[in-house]
Length: 152
Length: 152
Image 1 (cartoon, rainbow over the protein chains, first blue to last red):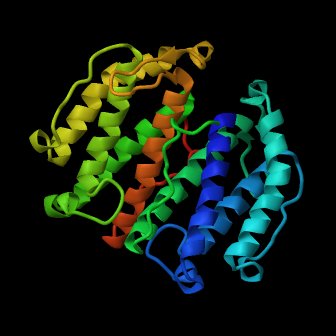
Image 2: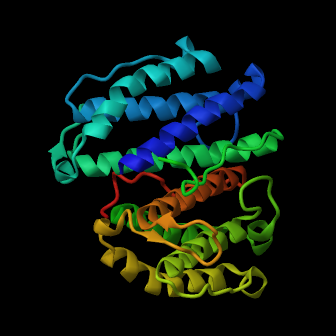
């Protein structure tokens, strides 16, 4: 599990770098499917991860509206800031907690901690797959999605 | 890890069902990015998984050319047949083998078994994310990518 989070964080950082090659207009342009735009996708990935990880810990949700951070640089800084809290939690997590049920404020039913972490892993990879299509349409080679050749 | 494989297999089955709503021409149409077409993506996901899982076991690669199976029904049958071999291997796999290095015939360097399994998990989710964009462009709602609401 932890390796898959590290994979996601590394790929996310590489996408922030790669996206510097796109104009602000292209980053914000509404697209069909997914989260709607490249920039919103990056924001959404970081936001969803942070919300759930805080939720597991019983901490209140932090709301930073997209409208306030809608540049590549600001969203990258937000993601980095949130990772300072997310990464130590994930790295310190024990698989003994896999079946431990938690109530998250915005959900009626409780979820197992392991399911939440797997949900976050799949959520990010899914959205990154969407970015890879949009970037190719813009003539930009996507970040490699290969895990096996990374040192994680 | 096993839950993420079960997630992928369930999502894959749902995509085979969902794709029945698309014409053979749309399924085969060349698209920008990803594996190139919706049908080839489904074939590629199953093929890559099967090849690596056989590789871990030291079994020779099985080559079924796309040209011989390029209908939704045939690729679904191929995927189901391969899963009959893949699923028991994954379900019987132990995390004690995570760092166990294996030589795969088509790679020069050895890989850890755990890295190969994580690679396969990420590989499928990534390509499914791409399908979700293409299906929306065709007016077809994608299969839900949510893990947390599935019973796995």
